[in-house]
Image (cartoon, rainbow, N blue to C red):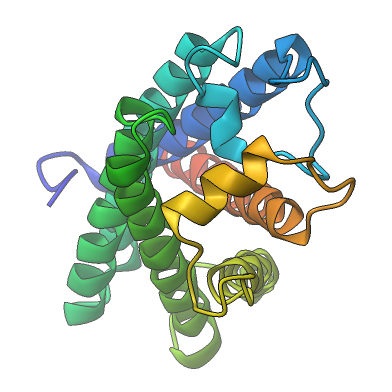
Length: 233
C-alpha cells in the first residue's frame, strides 16, 4: 500500500498533488489536442459526436502523441491518488478493497494511452476495464460517504461522487445499437467510418463521464491538500 512509510500529513499531500496533477494534465492535453484535431473528413473535433479516444488515434489526430502521453501520465497520477485516498480513509478492509479497485482503475486508464484506438482489440479491453472499475471506485466512495460514520471527508463530497457514478452507469449501460451491453469493435469502426451523426449520445456520455471523474478527483484532491497544509502548520 502506498504512503505507509510517510507521515500522515505528507502522505495526504502526495495524494492531493497526484490528483491535482493528473486532472490538470488530462484536461489541458484534451483541450490542446481537440483544438488541433482534424478528422477523417477534415471536420473539427466536437464533444457532441466524437469519442475521447479519437484524440489519440495515430494518423488522424495531429497531436495523438500528446494525448496518449497525457493519458499514460494521468493514469499513473490517478493510481497514486486512488491508493492514497484508500489509505486516508482508514477504513480497514474497505480501504483495502477500494485500494485494489483504484489500482486497477488507474493502471487500466494509463494503458489506454499505450494502446490507442489504432489497436482496437487491446484498446477496447483496457478502456472497458477502466470504465467498469471507475464505476465501482466512485460508487464505493459514495457509499463510504453516505453510509459510514466516518468524519475524514465531508458529507457534501457525496455530490461529486454520485455525479461521477451516474455518468459511469449511464455510459456503461447505454443501450448500444448492437442490442447488447457493449458495442463491438467492428460496429464502432463502421459507425466512425460512416457519416457521423450530429449528436451522438454515447460520445456525450463518455465525455460527461471523464469530466465528472476529473471534477471529483480535483475536488477531493483540493480538500486533502488543504487538510495537509492545516496539519503541517
